[in-house]
Length: 204
Image (cartoon, rainbow, N blue to C red):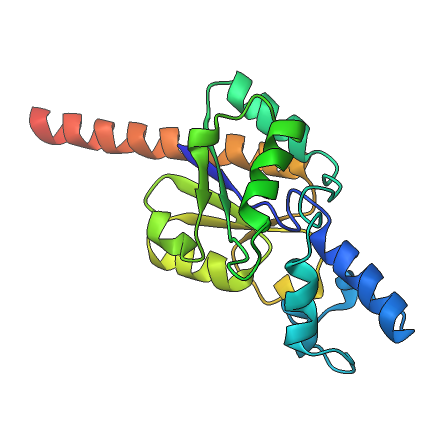
């Protein structure tokens, strides 16, 4: 079983940072958890354009200085210690000349036990999906496409824009750990049933 972790807004507080900058610039008082849409600029009443947020994301220092979300570092270390195959799957900001290098440095700083060969940069996350591969992400579009390609998608967080996601969802990483254990238990039980059916058919 391979487990793929998103970075932005799953591993770090990118959305919170973007809203802090936006609220200061536009004298507003918006909160990420109240967002109906994944992309901030698509939410009703937002005074800034997509280009405004793209410019922020292209600024030097943004991705290296983001705070880790509570539990992200601990759950990845725990799963690696238990010999799970853990990967980091993240969407790079192609218009930023700093994003990729800063994400690498963020991992070196906060997740030194992660092999950088297990870091994947792509917008097309679904192309990595397969049976027995889990993706934890906050973007419903990524999760939908991931499951369409045979993987297991898990929505992270209490954001309104994930309310319509009908698959697995967790509010924190302890819940995610318990879900992994349950999925593993269900898989083993399914395989046992299939083996018993095969044995019975052979005997018959």
